[in-house]
Amino acid sequence: MRTTPSRGTTGLRQFLDPELQRDWLDGKADLPDADERSESLELRFKYAARFQKLLRRPQAEDVLEILGRYGRSCLPLPRRTERHYWSVSCLPSTSDKPLVRVNASWMELFTLYADGAGLRARFIVHLSDFTTDRSIEQDHLDEAFLESCVTTPEDVSHFFPRGADMFGVNVRGAASIRKFLSSPRGLRAIRTFNLTHMNRGRNAYQASHCYSVADHMVGD
Image 1 (cartoon, one colour):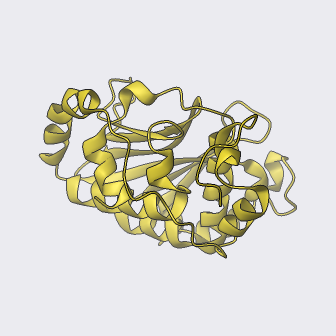
Image 2 (cartoon, rainbow, N blue to C red):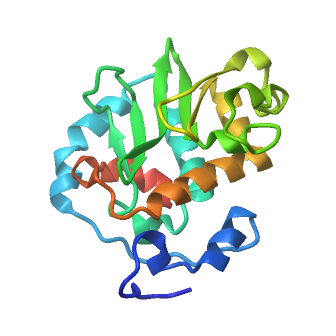
């Protein structure tokens, strides 16, 4: 693994060659991350009040625990790539009123919402990772596989965002969200989508990064 960016390359290719990326996708590589984080104190203080507001929500414990799983399992080199290649927003002021949202490049990756006193999640992934033949045909969706990734079939639904190889998965309940994140095929699909967008270049949402939430994603 490179320890300094390689000139003339973009995204994670600066740190991870294609072979290492494939090994990480398959769970064959334990990537040594940076010891120290590059931090903006201005951003940490800017979103501190929002983080305190999140902590008062009944879902706070589950939100932070699930984000810890997501950071460890779904983001390569989370410390080295923090803010510049992925970011997490706390109580962003968007119309859908999420609790937290993880982004990379120009793309939403993962969002958690309040569902009464519980949680629901939205994952954006590649449709081809959820079809029976790895095509991008919507009517080839492997619904049996999708339902196997959650605790009960009623906990999962889906939608098709704009884009040829885009797929949205809605998961209700903390238990089903945890199961989705631990399903080997589901986890690989999440990692694949995240790599696609982290390899596209710098994260467009750096200014909304909440370090207090990210602390729970990178192990601080």
